[in-house]
Image 1 (spheres, rainbow, N blue to C red):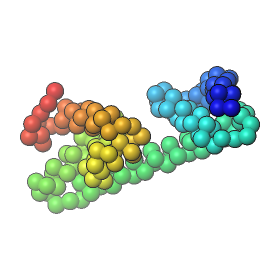
Image 2 (cartoon, helix red, strand yellow):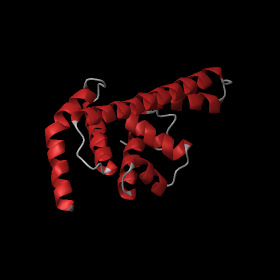
Image 3 (cartoon, one colour):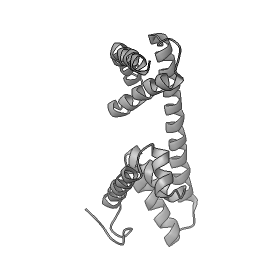
Length: 167
């Protein structure tokens, strides 16, 4: 029974993956992220365990919802960056305030993935296991991603901000 379901799902993916990806890719300008979102559509289709394989209409409706969530997330991140920049502009000119504005500026230069990982780790105060759960990966993979994000931050930050600079 399971093998038949898996085969039907593979056929569904083979038949519609290019159209789902194209639909998403035309609406965002990040090919890698479009691949991830298209994979999310098929993950949702698998998890729903529908009695019949869904058609392209259902898949595109799901893709539309997935894109809506992506747009909301991007808007929330942008609002956060704007709020950080505004806080940095309106704070008293102190060492801490100056450092905070520099940190905000550096964060805005980073890739979304690196910025999100650093914010989850430091602002949301997530442990390694919690970070892994939030990212949907293993604890070791989360550790590697955090290491890379820290390195990207260190490379983008001015030398006076970093106590130890790693290249």
